[in-house]
Image (cartoon, rainbow, N blue to C red; front, top):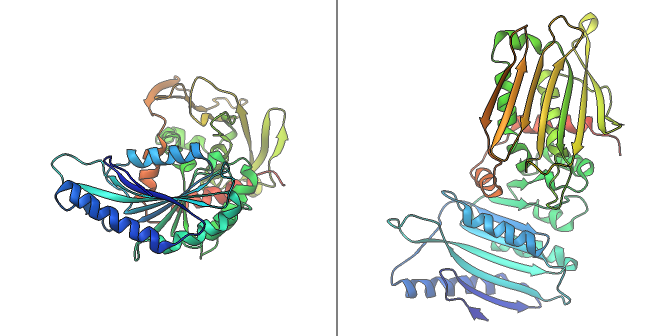
Length: 386
């Protein structure tokens, strides 16, 4: 057993079993050591939330904990990090408890949050779930942060989601987006399941705002009834694992659910992506909208979504075109042409949002995002059949 001497005190050990009482005792000991060292009483981050974070590998664990250190204003009282360590050759558990200082101004009282790390081989995944619930602070909501590549067929996820009030994911990391989005859609329709927050959806906020702003002008608003083609271009999954496919599906789902565009069936494979012909209106006023999704390699910009284009029929006397494109990590360009007016182009500051900022927003959220849920259900209806 070792005790750290840095700003964050810690105790670590290995054990062949998980004992919540031993972990609670170690935390109590650390608080005593911290008060002795400071010569004053430090505060626990009070009345916020519990957070369970799951890391599929050591690299993901380091990234998750780096995000914790970047949180400002809203930090959980207790964080439990469960690490599935594939390098462990025994069934022993690695356990560490720590008191981490909050990033505060010098004039403010010294405050800490509690961090509990438990690592185990993948064969012990279910036992990791059994330790999480007894370690949660009572009467505080529990957030489950799952930045993993899959939700399906994970016994750890199946157990942890039962104790969570809110589930935070990044669907852009899904290796199998179709199956995992279907599982997610099933989850949000179950009243017993936690509320879902998705980084991929949060990153779409500036894109959705800019699309909506196109149609603030009355003449442009009329063009919504004439849109006949939508093209969404996203990033192919790279070394980071992030893909633009789920984001593009969510944009397509958002447009379809908001504008009441009906899919007669799922998308089909095209030469360089997927396509589907949606329908709007009814009777003699029914019309078709072709939706295309393409993915391509991109090194210039780190964004998941690369461009969005809406266009009316070129055979119209005055066709309309609305386009948004990410040109750098800090800027998005918009282009619009409608009603015979001169084309308009503008640059909009819109930095790619960091995971720590996205996590902070989700931790401060309480209610459901019904627009996201509608977009997700619509996106699932667009996906190709398995």
